[in-house]
Image (cartoon, rainbow, N blue to C red; front, side, top):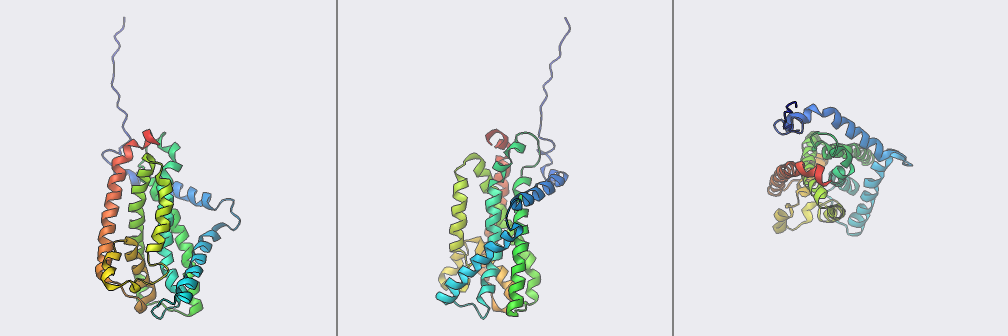
Length: 277
């Protein structure tokens, strides 16, 4: 009888354990594919196509302008109220859309998670890229508003990419955390829309954060989107908007902590995704 040798063969997830971050670059084509696929799926078989990315923030801007600008008559700092609102709608819509899409991304791509190895972080990250496309579409409305009201931005507009990166970190940190939670606890898919809706009301989208009483403004900045929105207005509105720097630095610190925690928690739970999803 022939001797049969037994071998213990351990299947590891590619190079992901030791070289996870290098794998992100190695699988960059998959990242491009997922991003492009989600962009096509979002606008496929829609009546007005990419115009949905423009209509949503435009309608919200009109409602907020009427309520806060015309009825409540809140101050705008000498800036046309539609521009004041839309300068805040840009980062808010980017954050809200990124959070919603990224938190559900793992569930939507559950088939891939159980079949092949790749850095799972690619999935929620690609969802954020789709929201960035909406952001660029919405930015065209801001340009039209500036032309219509003959509003000329200052040199501060050059700093806008920095605040966009700030918004990206907030969305990515929260999105990674919630996407990992959503895999294990499916109830979070119902909680995320509530977070987005509630966050819209407690963020200075329809009004300037300067209307918040001084003794509350620092604590108001515990909402990281306050710092993001104030930064966008500072960059877009020029000298007509100022940043409350103590609150902005607090929001920036919280954003860094949220991003690091989101990545850490996602990596911690990543090994269980294929078993739970």
